[in-house]
Length: 86
Image (cartoon, rainbow, N blue to C red; front, side, top):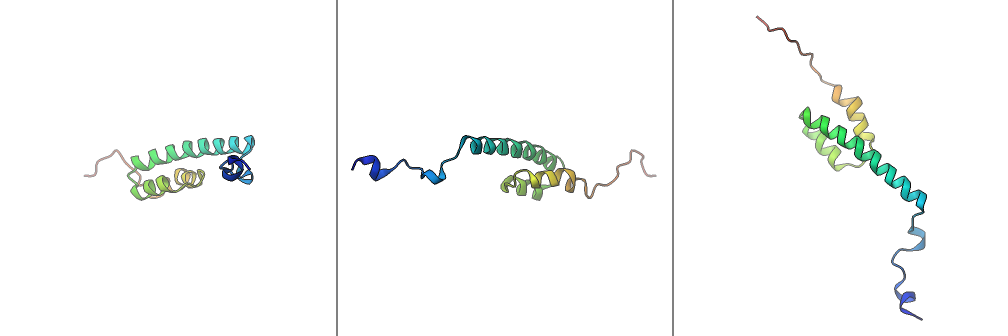
């Protein structure tokens, strides 16, 4: 019996990732990071602090961020007019 048999490789064979799985994880990370960046930018500009914190903490693979950008960031908008009231 040698030392490698006692210690092992550190990663069980059932937990090892295939190259395809690694590629999919990288694609998912880039996808999520892109949506998160846009959504955090929009929420910061609109001063939506609760949304900013929620999107910063939660990792939802871009789903929460997409919903914020296309649905929730447009809710509650007040029409702005350039005319002054007299």
